[in-house]
Length: 90
Image (cartoon, rainbow, N blue to C red; front, side):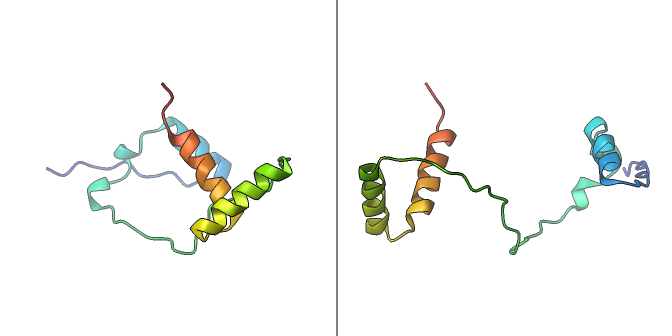
């Protein structure tokens, strides 16, 4: 049984489209059973540069740990922070 889909309105701005989808369920407008998985290999997550003061001895220990793992120390710090915030607290 095929259901009739509603037509998606024409939006004049991205803000107008965003406001619409924030208040409407897409299942009435799209047939998700026909959706296909796509890969966007060149899409890079946005990042923000921050300044962080660390004791010199701590930074040296981090650099040593990164060197043992053969990764840049900034990448190791990001991985550790990600693990910490993704781990559920008790």
